[in-house]
Amino acid sequence: MNEYEKMGLDWLQGKVVISSFQGLKFNAKQKEFINAKDRFNLISGGMASGKTLAYIVKFILFSQFFPGSKHLIGRKTKENAQDTFMKDFMDICPPELYEHQKGYGRIVFSNGSEAEFWGLDALQSGATTDIKKAEQKLKSHNFSFIWMDQLEESEEKVFNALNSRLRRRQCKHSAEEQEVHRNEKGNPVFELCKVCGRASFNQMNMTTNPANFWGYQFFKVNPSPFSHLVETSMMDNKDYLSEQFLQSELAKPKRYVQKYVYGEWSPDSLVESAVFAEDHIKEQGIHVRPPEREINGIKIYKEPGLFTYQVGVDPSDGSVDPCSIQVVCKETGELVASFSGYIPHELIAQKAVTMALMYAIKDKPLIVPESTGAGQALIEHLKTKYDNIYVRQVFNQREDTEVNKLGFSTNYASKKLLIEHMNELFENHFPKIYDRETVEEMKTFIYSDEVKKKGAGAQAGYHDDRLMALMLAFWDVKGKGYQAVQNLNNQIRKVNVYTIRKHKSSYE
Image (cartoon, rainbow, N blue to C red):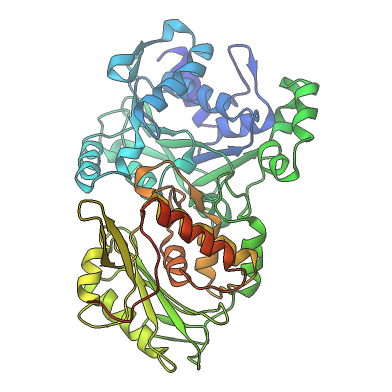
């Protein structure tokens, strides 16, 4: 047993506390993260808070404490994981300890430990067949340790998939020959083999920027008993920063200082690319209330009256995301009914018609379904059951004419119109959203370069189905200050993208 391995065993048994490495001394928050022994460890903080240094040092130590250990280093893409990690790693790790095999995407240590770089986006985006291939590849591995930089980029299902592969033992002796050591919570921390004396220990270590994603619930609001959260700020690391830099950062706007200097993590820590203004979200939060009643999954917030209503339907993919149906009152701006669930397209159509007919006291509500992708299957079912479906006009360049198509087709241009129209209504304080989940989706709806999100969509780990259905339900609803929306309609007509016209009451 070499010096590093003995130190690792002493560290596991609480005989040693790591406070420095290669001349680097750690601040209190870095020390807490490095010495945490829980299965899931997350360090959250703003800029220049020292979280990356703690993350890299802990990785180096674990590679040496546990010879022959297998590590996964993950980030959005494999190239991003490797390039970002190696830049800091090479500045800290003694060169005699490792070899970087860039072409293979791995680090090989002299003691037999190995680390592979993985692109985690392959497990959560792209074609279903590609995701399944990535999942199958993961199933062929067992890891000792997993390292995830910027956890906010990964969905919870990726985190769960990786956790299922975090189970590699350091020795080949049976479970009966292992002595289990537990922490003060009673949770198992590591095993010590009675035969060879080697310690087996598995852990996932992660970093995040303060953002609204699933990790906020898992690590802070309702923390897992196997988790440990360290929240750090620039001020924790101020001894290593110049006074000029600190003062320039503290002089920036309040929201920036809260998030990036002090590293505050709360539901209001919206990402910089948030689509909806914080004031609009807070205003809608005031309207939130329980439904008056619920029937077959339909939440009724306002009973039907002598008003005109409109129904928005986002079918999504029943195997990945729930569908959502929202009903709004065109005169009052109220969200009067809502449904969300994992059901097939035929039942989505049936549910949408049921909700439309519930509110058909004055006249038949217009149903505005999303027609892109899975929406086509929904429309095929819908048009056999209902005759007041939204119709768009599409310009056919070859025939130099316009043809009628059912449903709202979402692309970059039309999604931008949906968002701008909704923001116009918010500016005029017209919508009143009573559904809590819909308001929550506003907080995590961001502008994005991801192709599948068409310019904007839910942050990783969240959904936007209710919000999309809401925007469809409000589409072309005038409310107050409608002139701006009319101008937008005229603009899009000029470029021959899906033009807006008066609704028809049936499909021909």
